[in-house]
Length: 291
Image (cartoon, rainbow, N blue to C red; front, side):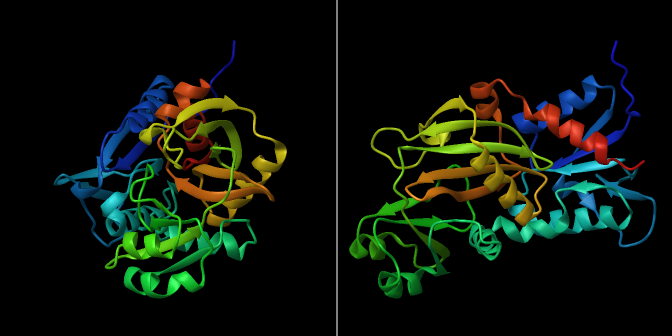
């Protein structure tokens, strides 16, 4: 018989919605006997004091033993204040407040390059300026990407400078990356606390270049080679993420990091691989809760 030596905890899951992933994490924590509460970003009132409680939906609540923040979206500023407030009260909170600036994908690409992590060549700026001048800096095909986004939305492949000028959103921050020739798939590695818990290929659907399952890509479980695992872990460490999905491309020169997704969704990953990341996430919370 295996004894559960972890003391029961009060866990907060903080987010914008009770997504499938958030419910899975809550269910796993409840299965282990922990007390779990979901907290919506927009129901907090933050009293900038040292009181040992917070206001939520107009009531005072005692502080949790650990908090997990997922699905920040448009609540980035509020998420930063909530997480910093909990951190100031010595509550372990993940992700750390410092990482929210990295939701801008151009910023996190810049950080990866600072750590000498191979990524596609990237040009970043305001759309109108990119449309006028990127043609001198970019080889084709090139991929236009929004700095904030998910599931491949707003990502456009261009074959030449005429298409680039046509498709670049003129009134937005944007970044353009050189298209990396690949075998029609990428590799998603799921990482919790600097450990790869599983990986899968995502195959590009016919008529597209994006492998996102939400856009028709097909997943297949795979065993990532050591080179891929080491690169993915290095990328996560550079960004200081605790839970992440790392997307790699197999380029002619080896693996390249395309994107690192903080607090990734994992319904399709779980269905494809048979691995439920909720278990590893709750393990991580148990290891790092306030003692």
